[in-house]
Image (cartoon, rainbow, N blue to C red; front, side, top):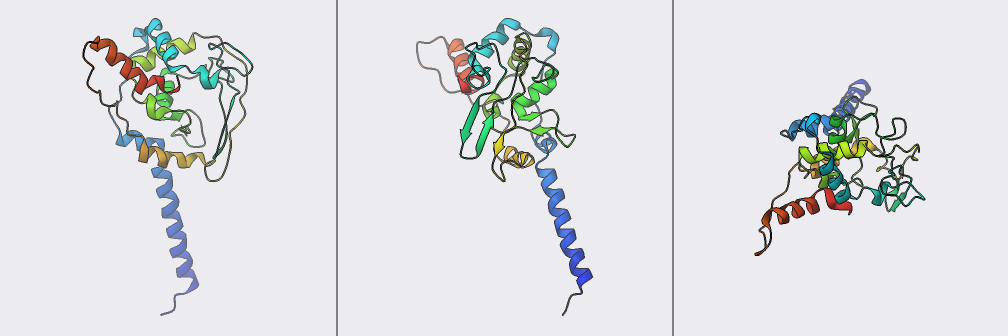
Length: 220
């Protein structure tokens, strides 16, 4: 039985519309958040700056974000390049500069970037998916207290005025929205499981070290 052109066009258009809407839903940061509830964030008022500095040292953010041409791990103006088979990632400015860095980020925005892989901004109101070259798959293991303290520590550093270049990535990797589907598939939202402690060690100290290695210390 022949199908008239108008009916066929409607069927194709409807299928495309459903596909686009499905992609937008699956790739939305909100979808991941709704399916992975339970993350808590303590009040900023109780922040421990000394602990935040320890977490910052364990994280060694300067490995990627230290200002290019500098030898100072407290200047996090970015500018370095990470050349991969997917293209070139340009390390962003994560200093507290309010124009070119993260100085205008709230604690909630910082925590969402660290533990969910979603930054502020973007075309849609649900946020901007971050590429997993920023290892939030490890940072998701951090406690809310450590994320908060790290935020306070980073905001106490010197602001650096430097606008990092945009990433130079290949298709389809450069379609940032699609990272949301990757997050939904591979970002489990779990703190991780503690292993047994060796005999003869300070258990509390060992557990803290294990936690830092599995979480904040990914880039150290």
